[in-house]
Length: 464
Image 1 (cartoon, rainbow, N blue to C red):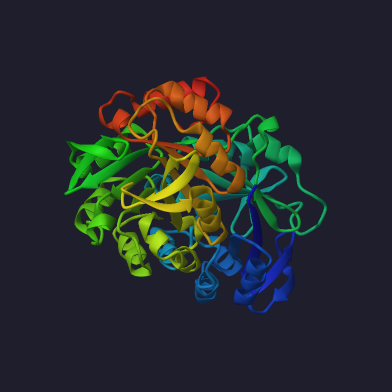
Image 2: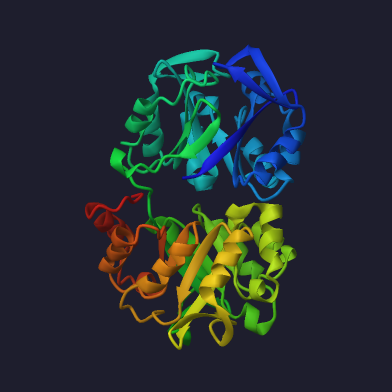
């Protein structure tokens, strides 16, 4: 479960409205950035920010305040209120905001919402405010005739991945959460639902008993060497596969949930990543892109993010300089920092390898991953050298060991050979969030869309 403390902004201050009434406002903190720091000190990893002035009057008066909040670092920040065009979305994302919430515009211009959802993927959510079950807009001042649940269903069909739902009649009253509403929303397949509770703590509902599980992800991986996609077995014997730009274009159309791009020899060759190829790959896709290889400084993070990456994967660079994890998390947010680890059994112990699996560091891999999460890594890619390219299934023992010690999303990598390997992974190892594979997708041994349909038919929640 993710807890989202919330800051509502009015006139540059952190405030609270009673049932959405701007005339019944309480100021909680005159310095919202200081409020954000208090949340961080209390252990918060996520923050929900609402620009009430933007929602009510379509102004950008709180933009500098939001920028100050984003500079605090260490938080995944989502912002809503007055976002009515793509320029505002780009402005917020450039400040380090992790997700933009479309409110009134989602109702007034649904085609725009669908386009933004397709273009920005998980960086877009729709905020659905409901009064007596009907959608409310314009700072809660206007109630539409459309039922909120029906509108959420329409959003999901258009490609929206996340809904933030508020029952206005309960908001600010401290009367408890409208659980009947959220149980109904959980029946909508493919949506991440965040519920606004009466005490302004926001949380992602992951209620299997309500008939829904968090959607699992299928992620193809492009291992790039000398400008070409390659693949080997146990990190060795690399063979040329295809052009990375063409392959990225293919996976974007094939239904992949995300794409990973690794410049696999950048670290061992002591150079920075191929930014020219990266820019071309990023220009071809509209799904989240994670990039790794040769990442060892904040400048490297900045460079690949400006080339179009959504997340940055750090591996050997973090082993050389562990402080890069916390520094990047503070500057760009935990959600941007992916810690990738190449792991192999040595004398029955999981050991961390570096330089593309060429060098044993002697470091206990489980200790290393736990340390990385404590210092700000928001996601883990667990690469099993023992199972890489073998196609006999994921390294489930390793994945379970990681899941017992790390409470962030885990991506399994290495060993997938058939559809049943993914079914086993997701059904019997629920703490794993995504499956990553390369050769079985590159050679079309397994079709991604067919795989996702197969998994959904077997009880795994997938976005199809």
